[in-house]
Length: 195
Image 1 (spheres, rainbow, N blue to C red):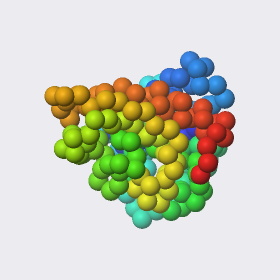
Image 2: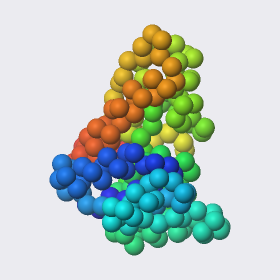
Image 3: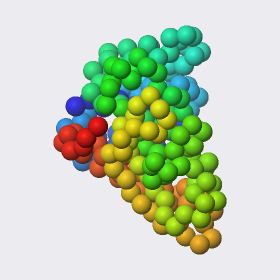
Image 4: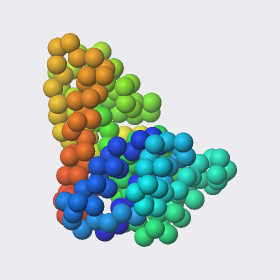
């Protein structure tokens, strides 16, 4: 089963999944392509240094047809499943249609709480702290056309501690994301979920 990635920044989740595939601890998966909308991001040279196929697709490289270019690159790579790793753009309708129920995203909250447009990263952690929540966590979801509204595949809770800052809570949530994504991929591979 070929897995491809979309990333905008450092691609930490993509790196963890790729490492697991290379270490044979994520059986049945092979690496397809990584697509980034930001050629200056750390994931681009990292992919090149590690012999992985990586391309830059953005409004700069494909004005007006970015969605079609992403869809075609994923198809050309033989992609079976797409993993978003800090991808900061909404997935276009062409790509969504071509990979219906085959695009996974990780979100730094226990969805449906603290999801939606402009709810990402530190904005989520700030909202969790402001609301006085006692737990937070991460969710892996199958994406659809609406921000953070697709079915949740798997979640992992972490405590919100007295004295937490945005940074400390963010670090605690990030510490569970890699394993959560790997477990969600295994669940997806086993078809152990309903959409």
